[in-house]
Length: 341
Image 1: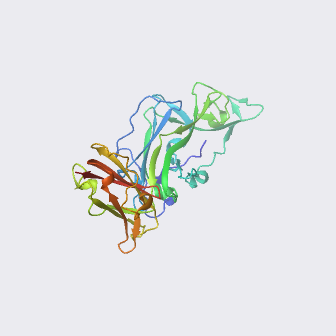
Image 2: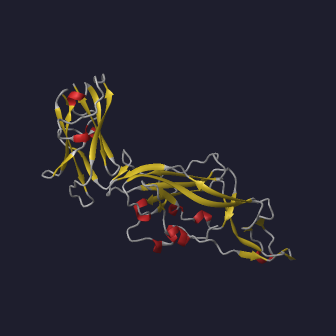
Image 3: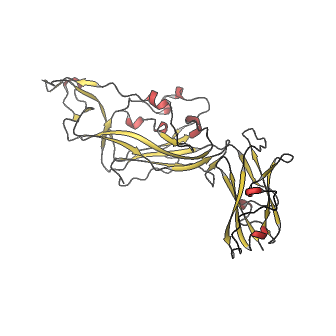
């Protein structure tokens, strides 16, 4: 069980200057109540707020996760006091590109187990051989729901580049109201108060409420998209936005910027292609570059222009629509469509 703790708005001293975390009940769509799909009587859902189209975040792009927690049982839920005021936003777990995990390190410090109180007698009958360890009860309404908007980088140290997975894992202890060994209403030391027996062997259920999982990529670099003569897909209503003649050598160029906005050539970039429309070429296109200038379909970095450059030999392709995929060594990628006629 967790110690009671207030909402962020009640404890502003926890936040560093400029940190904004909102408990939202009306600004975003409220959680939709429905039947639980698993054993816990509560359900947690997470989703990104305003994510980039390819779920790839650069160093300057804020990652914002919305966490919704709701009672999906359709009934009252009896738990330990303070649960509804939990700092749920501290209970995200990020799996790193190398298989490790990132959590909010303040969670263990802020939410220590409650030191229980003790019920020594019930209706003047001494509880033997030992007193009953109890904490105050909290009853969650059947319509209980709460929502957090979480600026991830403010609370989680995501330092590696690559693909992450994130979900929420929320500990929950519930107690069956009809079980007098679990929910106690007649303790002489807590007159007219309902407490729960935290050592109960019946009527107590321990859960971990696990949300859905999200995946995203965190990059070291900022990309401004493809440079001329290519035209990025967002520049027209129906890509491809640029068509070339079959057999033409097409320069594929882009820049990567570091967090300071300076062009950098420290990454490795390679090119692959995928045909979206048209008849396939006679042979699968594997070596895409012209001559030996682009070995292994790898871009070269031009120190003078600060650009990554690849000379695409369209002779190995065919007429139709092709997607060019650039894969960066930090785990990110970017794509553009071209037409060949």
